Length: 385
Image (cartoon, rainbow, N blue to C red; front, side, top):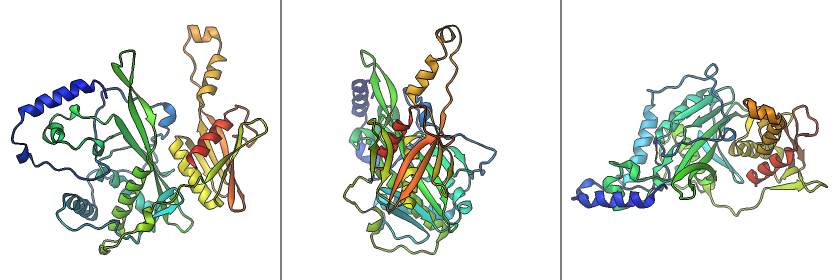
């Protein structure tokens, strides 16, 4: 985004010096994701509340950096051939072992295998889509990728075709994506996998707009759906290698549905949010809230489904500023300001017939005294709609 005019001029000058474009093998695909590692011009400094997954090597299952299954390689080669038009391609091939399940606006992959078998394959999956795993914790079933640029968003023109790969700095989308995968063990021993997307957007700053900063952007449910579909197809190849492609469309997996709000923020007598009511029974609301917490960047310290509880840690900006101001003028002036630790809250889900009520309490189960509960409920309401 910085100095677009200079980049365009540089691109045009270099393109003018190149000849024989037809011999370069111009090839663009319709892939929605084309990630590759890249360095940004402005430092990609992520706010602490957007990067909560802590790496814990003591409990992490070792990765398999040099081991890629033959089935995964075959699936990847088949996808690449289909993108080039070298052979017939299926539209959302039907799967048996790993299925994309859709409940309202929430999608996840249900795998008829235990988490212990799925975890190493999930590690391998990110490399096949051009992403690198940044952190992982097998005890919580959470895996997070590095921030990466989606090259599929770049313009598909003659200039990029001739010099884009040779001088990559000329082209930049001004966005970076990150994915978080979370595995849950189902009651029958199978596995549910949720994938959430985050985005950072580069914006201009300064009086002359001569520098840039990175700010959080909106999550993209469509990219989440694409990743879930790719993951399901790859897991199917791993666990069901004898499955033969079928020329049919799995419309029920990603069919478009009319949008209807699934949650409502309920205000109290003081006009502030006191609860979120989700128009779904407890089982579905539990999944929806779990995805909402991932999307909003909350740190989930613990969860107890039998009690309907999520234990989260959250540092509200206004609360943080208040605590720093309470440290005193001279403390702030002559010594380093002490860091304010995130506060632990208890999220309670209470079934109410075919609906579920979500409330926020303090860590000990009492009424919140920090004044942050209404903001947490607002965020949960936005992400569960």
